Amino acid sequence: QYHYVWILYHNRRFDEALGLIGKSIESVPNFAHGQAVSGWVFRHLNKKAEAIEHSEKAHQISPATNWITANLAATYAKFGEEQKALKLIKKIETDKNQYVSPYCLAQAYLNLGEINKTFELLEKSVEDRD
Image 1: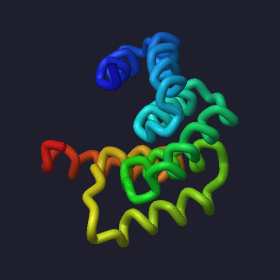
Image 2: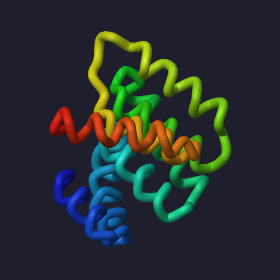
Image 3: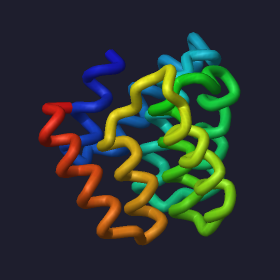
Image 4: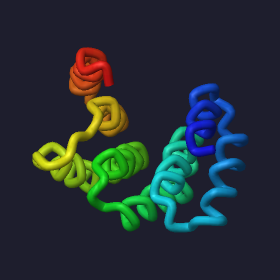
């Protein structure tokens, strides 16, 4: 079900994605990945309150998961909370114990308007076959 939500998301079927992941969250509220994906979709729908709520909830559940932290940073960046975003990005970039996809970090930099850094990370993602 979780993977199907990503397929719906990438096909821009956001309402269907939210409906499906919402059912998962209702049955398992502490499903960090579900909360993060909801935040990701709401971010792309420009729904600030919902995007921040779900992204923060995911990070509260799983603060050591760097892709979830990157998702929260991207959400903060998109909605003008640059200092919060930069603090999280710094945490990720200095964490030597856990890998984070350059693609996930690129999302944060994109929402900060850092286009050169975004493309640098996307190129690295392609090189890494990530």
